Image: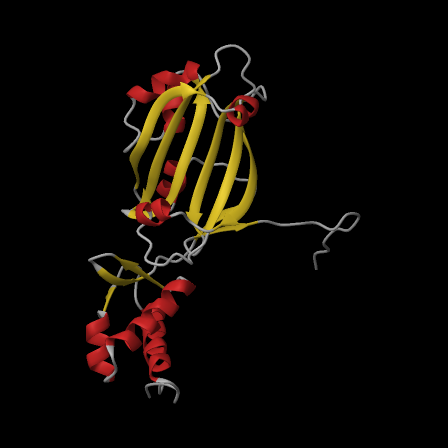
Length: 246
């Protein structure tokens, strides 16, 4: 017997139905438009839009300008202790990684970049800014900064290929990463790049210093993920205590 929608405000009835579709549908499934929802539930388009916006803020559906409303991708999860490039991470999930380059230049480093990379001689850096996609879904904005000695990576295809693979090809091999996780609201430009319709969707920002196997810093990077599309799992231990197994 089919479940009945709860008796409540009209937009809550629409939310209930959208939740059912999101729960039972596959990621990327196209949902009815606001006008179709309004006609189906006999409400104004504004009421339908209110319901869709609420679920979009929860990360259950995603809205794309001019394209419609879709069942959202279930959040990507990253587990502690595992360091993978974005390309390799997506490959292991059975997805195709790609990028759109926003900037790829050699320029003077900022004070923070020079300190992060421990530069003492040539204080120019390679700066690469990209939108990172997983199966065409915009997942994050990434800014990678390398020493100018790594400028040869700019000749690689960094839209279809991996930056870390390009670095390894010139003998610069990432080995370990230190991360600092924060959160913030997106700028107008970031909302546009990530195809966000609401200014209230936060970003999960992962700042990293990546080192080679000698411990030398080779990359300073910032990846700003959509918080409702990306999760990071960590385990914390209480000092002096250990978990017991049965």
